[in-house]
Amino acid sequence: MSNANFQLQRDSYGRLVLTAQNGQVHEGVTPVRAFPIAAPDEGLSLVNFEGHEVAWIEKLADLPPAIAQLIEEYLASREFVPEIKRIVGVSSFACPSTWQLVTDRGAAELILKGEEDIRRLSQTRLLIADANGIHFLVRDLTTLDRHSRKLLDRFL
Image: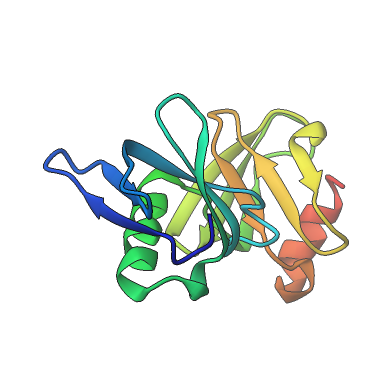
């Protein structure tokens, strides 16, 4: 299905309901990003409650604004990946260690169980999993301040 071949709305329970061009109704659809970190606004699938894809979206920007907003609101309520802006300090350079952070969502603390919980997504992008299962994103290492990079280098 192309981007304009369906209608999307919320039902009285707040679930997304997709109506296909042929009139078929899919209740409780869930948007799923194909590349949530690398290309969050490209390649989204709308899947039904059985996990079957009912619509494919090449680019979120190509959708009518009302549909794009519904999808963005749904994803924002489901996804939580704070972006690290600064590393204030670490309790120890041996793991486990507790990190004091400043993120795009405010001050935070993460517990790093081991260096293997730091995953390099590209030359400049990292995803760090803490002991509680929360993932923190470093979008671009080069934009971190010198102190933060120095602390992070001890674990890479």
